[in-house]
Length: 65
Image 1 (cartoon, one colour):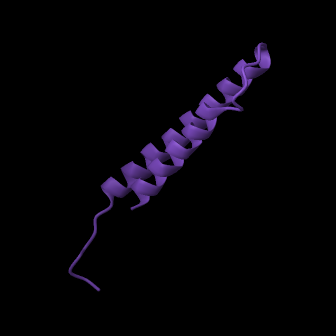
Image 2 (cartoon, one colour):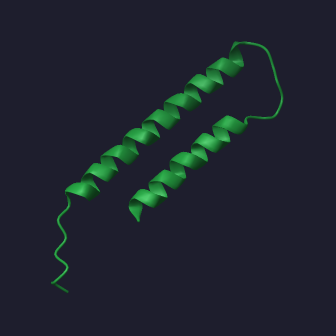
Image 3 (cartoon, helix red, strand yellow):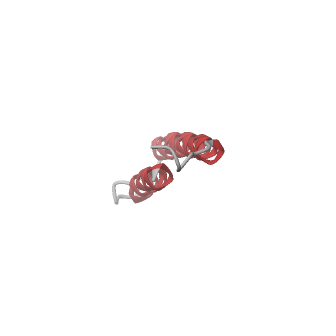
């Protein structure tokens, strides 16, 4: 379930970054925003990957309550 929420978070961040403001503006400010947003998405992806590794490596004993 954690993987699902992590993927939804990453997709949400990507969607917000991809949509933008709906206006086309020239200049380096837009490219700086895109670069910083890409860094956020990359760091979120790293968090998701590390969380997935922890979940995959966890051993669950389903017989104990």
